Image 1 (cartoon, rainbow, N blue to C red):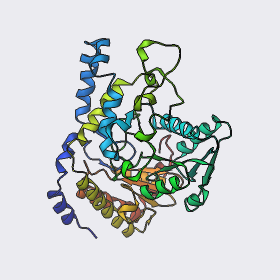
Image 2 (cartoon, one colour):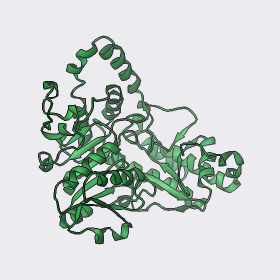
Image 3 (cartoon, rainbow, N blue to C red):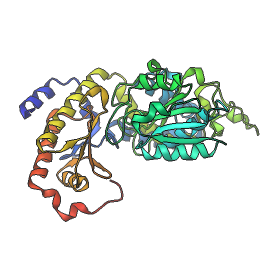
Image 4 (cartoon, rainbow, N blue to C red):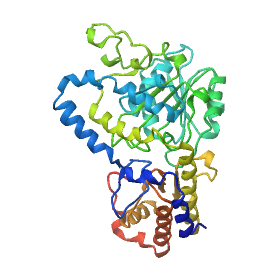
Length: 405
């Protein structure tokens, strides 16, 4: 078991410790939900104020030619190193759901004989919901959902695309990206990854794995703010063959020629649709700039250390951990199963430890090494053990369900 003294010793030697001051963290709170909504970077309010007062208030529409119109490509270039992509293979815009729809329909249109989307049962629900809508838009297409153990057998000569979430939102189980990309290609299918729980949390190498397509959100580990724009990746070899089914004017080859007909822009720009949300992109860019000189190897190592501290506490409390113990097989959160996980989550929040609940019985705690210390996670583990031991989670107030869990 890790001791408080050991945790403090690790903090004293932590190369990432200075990053904590770059976040506006409320006093008295141990925030273990950055895997759902990252906290506010201190640079964000000033960036938003400048965009509102100067760029919008003073420069007005001139700001489109002073950095706004290029924001999707510029931000995509800042995300690219975090996912093993080239700068011209990533673009920022729309939501993860919209980008999933775009990539799925595009993949289904590659071959007239391949009309099946294969995915995992228990995948994040919106991925499966969007896939239902996507196949409904392509004649003859279908969605095939199978258990993880049956994925390989489900790939056949009718598979157009294998859609998987790299790190599972609930269990934190991580797919071997290279293995499953190769399996999709061996079956003649494209590989589409959802990186929402991966980017900024675990090493990702889309280029090295040979992946074709990927999407992901930016409001978790990238700290872009609630509802921040998502990103979309298309491998360079596919960029001139695939086109977005959402043929909006920002994806046009010459949007300000105002032509009636649609001509897709070259490269990643063709995946844009509507006007970029500049205020949201300003907030996201402030979050992305935190990563400019960051030692990502130190980040991954610290994530594993924080996970171990909480895993030890959960085991001491008698909780069932449903997350893999091997760091290479998991993301940067831990999940415990408990019959009253919702009440347990609320009891911890009342004590200043913010995690979240995932139905039907999962307490989920995330580890973001940029601002969490080893000692904080140790204290959170002690509170977890206390709440379990004294059964204070049984307070009826903790059973009242809120709209967002």
